[in-house]
Length: 176
Image 1 (tube, rainbow, N blue to C red):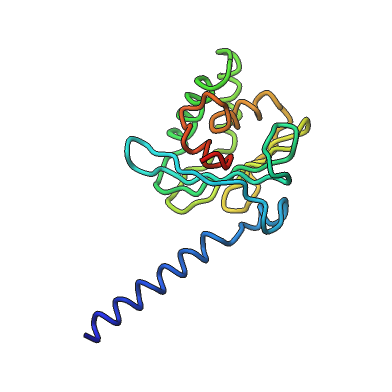
Image 2: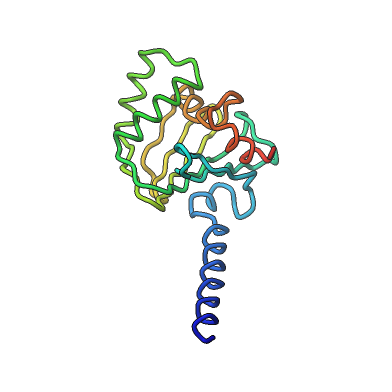
């Protein structure tokens, strides 16, 4: 009986800690949006396996490209830099009208800062309308770009109405 009580307590403590971990904002989100600006969160799957959770943060209750927002990705598996660059470019080409020349330019841009990812890493992307997009890895700034065509093509991977990740998009926008 003591064994079952002990296991039950371990389970309860684990669930409480997991909930606490999920509810705490990263320092980047805290800096830009305070403590309660999450619009929604969804999960992106590779085949049937959860690849990452993605949340949308905004100063207003409705997201648009006319207001500052952030996408925060909590990684659930390891991925090499090359895998990340290739999958990002594939998704950008699918979700936006991106030329071959732009894809070449974007590959160079992504290669300049993309890190390999480990399970539990956090990538935060802050979009500032008509100014810049900022990329953070585990709360450390990686890169800032002022190319807003790139910025919107990148964010459209998840926010385009035609995204492959429609379930995650709907959850992020609070439509699900």
